[in-house]
Length: 201
Ligand SMILES: [Zn+2]
Image 1 (cartoon, protein in one colour):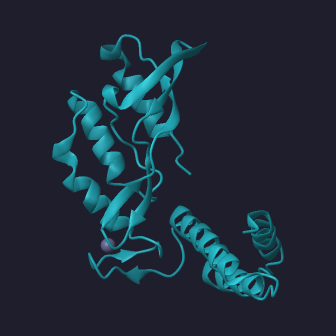
Image 2 (tube, helix red, strand yellow):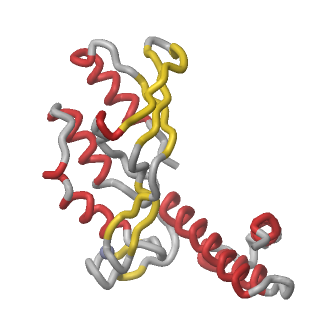
């Protein structure tokens, strides 16, 4: 499959949007879809892949800017923005898992729970990772006041919402960066600030 060509075609369609004719995100989405599908050199598989990528970007933009057509989720009956998943179903799923994990620190647990209840994308979920879920931990450098390590996160992060099974899916191990917190008992406030300032998009 010609992924580079698909991306080029999608970028070309984005670049040729006339913002006076296609005023809102839904009209722009339809325009991009039609422009890319009009490329007769694409095979059916390439068209399907192109639409998948366009839909993903459309969802990201809707959720990020909190704009666009909403739909009623047939599972939870909430008005959600995403088309490939329902952000409320993801939050409900994460909430049901609250009893299954703990960092051992109530403040940290509550912050992670709060972040999870504001989840907007299946591939951007704040989680507690138990130490035994990390392997190949290696010292990398010293950054600011902390030591930085690399490691492999055995299960890897959530990547995708499975609408049929109604659960978040992981796709296996991935490399991660670890930051060692000195004097954890005093670091809570600073750590909280850092997490809260994280821009997830
Ligand atoms: Zn839902």
